[in-house]
Image 1 (cartoon, rainbow, N blue to C red):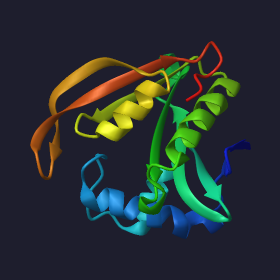
Image 2 (image 1 turned 90 degrees about the vertical axis):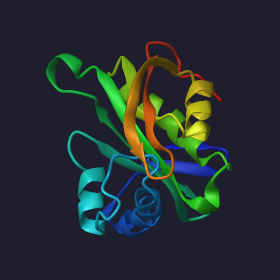
Image 3 (image 1 turned 180 degrees about the vertical axis):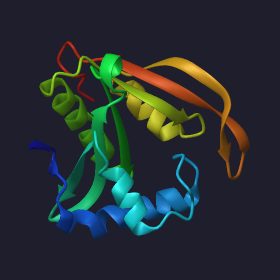
Image 4 (image 1 turned 45 degrees about the vertical axis):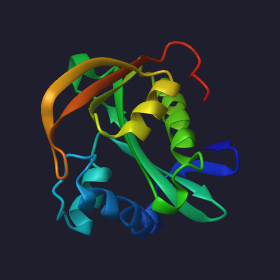
Length: 173
């Protein structure tokens, strides 16, 4: 468990499911940042969020879950030394440092688990806030997938691949 600022990141437990769904539901319904069905139901979304090989986390502030992440191996076998992660923040907590706390914790956790790097496979290019935060956290854009995401407002937009080596101490924001 890491305390950054006043937020505490801890492994998610079943009692967090309603709070996690409250965070994921509007993000998935908007369809602007994740390759998930916009009409996905609660149980399917939570099953995906907690699916092996990922470990789910929540960021809590004053007893309220305001963000969630899941971190695990990007690919099996030859790719299992590279972590992957996803993040979502409650609309009420955007811009408060919750996402920064989650990404910092994810990098520490991944390195402690033996991962040598972290890769985000599919960052939607119109998600400027996330791109800015991930770059500030030390991630580089290493690839661009032209028109790979069908954005509900902008049509086909690029997706980015972002990467960071975890051998050294995690980059503090």
